[in-house]
Picture (cartoon, rainbow, N blue to C red):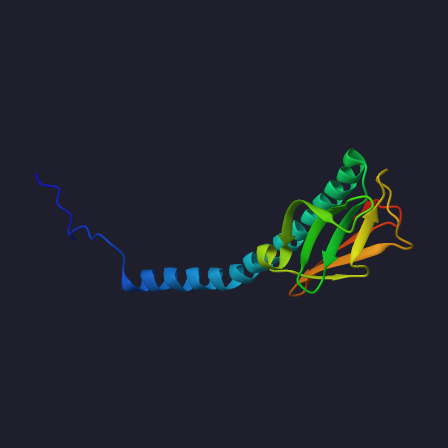
Length: 154
């Protein structure tokens, strides 16, 4: 006795099933893309703020290790940050490490209350007031504050 089905087995998907899947994927993509884009922007802003904090530590450590005045230079117009050491009795400066162009690396803009922070050979800042650096991109911003004595506060 043969056990054949009355209807042959069909394979594949119907057109309605395919349309439903495509519509669901479209809806999920429409909802997810803004969250992913905003997350990337936040990550870039945090990365740039961390780079500033890192260069702050480099400037302070270089001043102490080499016994010379170190300057953390913050160029807001070009979103560039660098560390230089001043030679005593001279106008010549030596750049420590790489020049960080945060604008091209992270796509951020900088605004700062001072264009440089000077550290004595003991690693102490010489500013009269706190320095505030605002790192921003689109509607996301992060603030790094450097106290007058040179301590970094985030």
